[in-house]
Length: 322
Image (cartoon, rainbow, N blue to C red):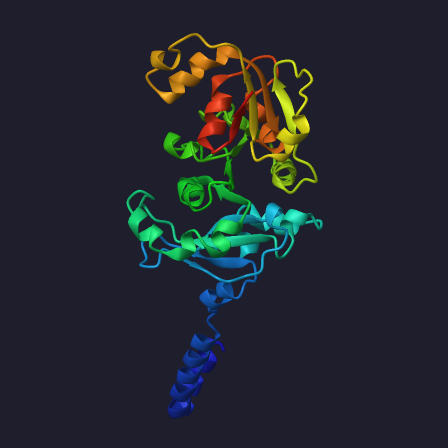
């Protein structure tokens, strides 16, 4: 309604003018979108994480299919809908029926960002059973984008076998070295090569298409395999008579060690230093295929870098010595 018509109505029928004004205000309030309700009804949102709240984490009891391919993406709670969120919005638009992006395989966890660290709230976290039971501990992969990399320790503590995939773009390269210890795979923009001190397993991307393709490969690598056999990653793999039995047992790494000099362990002041002194005496290393893929950036088959065994043992690998 134009200003002229409003003035004319006020002059001719002031009582009706003010009645209509109140009604319009009421209707405008009624029409205001309820963003909270909209976010709560998204089927892929599994809960919310808030280090500053009493409960810390609230998780819904949702059915998760294809557990070994299941993926959880952290999303800023300020984001209206998942379609507008970094990474998961692109995954949903480019799903292509990929097993890792299906409705009951790919989920989001909303996060109310906090300055509190995991160490500061540890006692409150462990008191919350949903931290290490239920759906949160069932995901095979957790994707952390940019500033949310600081939550890597939280998810590793809930499930040490989870694969933490971190994504860093060209503008978010200030990653705390402490948090890098809890990351399994790092995707970073190709402009950041050599800037982030991470060596375990790295991929570079130049655009959204190459990032999505890389994510699919990593999720497939971690998924169930008909056979997860021990494969050689260092040394000459000569005939091993009981290899079938070794493939069936629960060990992740098989190591053949030559005769060790006496008191070798006493010459090391730490476990890390002990691994370094042990390396020259190792003639063969076999590793489960899934684990070898996880540390592919650390091994070229010609040399055995101490960092490979250090990372694997730190991540809980079970070793058998022959």
